[in-house]
Length: 489
Ligand SMILES: [Zn+2]
Image (cartoon, rainbow, N blue to C red; front, side, top):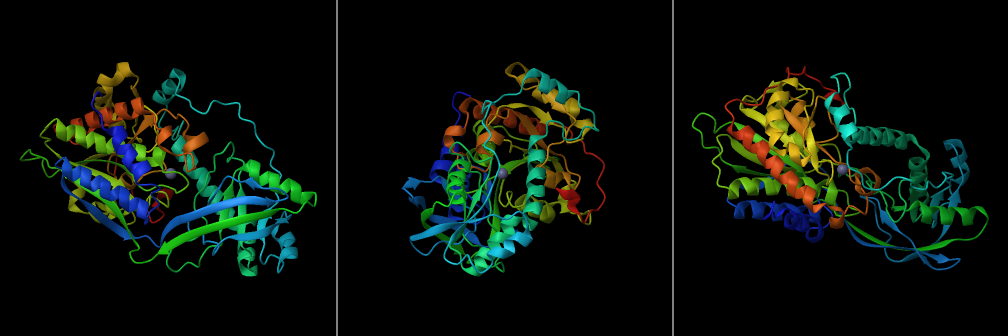
């Protein structure tokens, strides 16, 4: 705790590397930094490890947007990932599209050329009466600890978030904004604007703006704005006041290497019988591009990198091999961890297992923001309860004691769970994750809580140490049946 390097690691992954979209220069900078650090501390075989084909690389190289009429006003916005640029500075009228269904959209067909397109919204502005940052209160932790196996996902914010996003994504594919964007592109519009009630007070939540496979066509520029700026434009257009915007956006696509890579490194096991068995720890290194992915998930990566540094610096001789993995392609569908598990341990679709499956102890993941670890989700594995209760015991007085049978979803431990390997994620205080930083332009270094990250690295190091040293591997659940549907994770 007193000589932690976790904030220095986080600084290099965020401020120094920049945004870390999968297959982007920022991701490569962060991955190379991690490899170089892990090597410098003496870890073995630190390297990039390809998991499969991702698609186009993309980088935002310039982003300017402002209102120029009826008066000048800077706007707060971020282009969605994989958007095309504007080919220089453009100045154009904003056209308001007032349509409640696809039939009403037809009236605008052929009229969108050279315009910036804004779909009318009517959502009322929501004042915030909640504090941004919160910690779990004892009642919440007690109800998690007392959860029944049937109450899967209780207090399961990561899973709920992912599910909401999936449903939103499916709806969006059929929804008006997507139809309008296609029409705007076909007509030759300059860009579309996107507003979201979630994006307020200077915070813009921004993800992908269309396909990124090499076979996908280029996506029209889609500029995500804060709801205040978006509604300013909509209100004036509705009363017939002409609104002009200036935009200059430059984006760069690359196709020279479309593969996705994880970062992998090891502390070799030393016990004659157990050294071929493996304990893993990890988090996803890729991020969205609006901020620098500090809480999602430089925090988790910095914790994992610091945890292996602590173990290495202490000179422990682990009985089992300890392997760190920093994944990519998580944001687009857990691709990095899925690809790694499939080629290393087995295929969830067939449940044909590889020899390494038998030699695996457990995987520990952190991807719920910057908040302090308060305990661990058993992921339905009741047989691990007593073991984890004893491993977390030294941290009870510091506030980490909750063991819950509940699952948490939405991220990379599920790739292990899907082939019947013990994969776990920790319970973390939410802090500002959902309300402020998760996939937003405010996901930056300043939103990291130093004391929490230091503590988290120590507790993760302790869990990994225990898993590497104990006589038995972490017990497993029953093997799942082959599932071509990938259990929807
Ligand atoms: Zn995320």
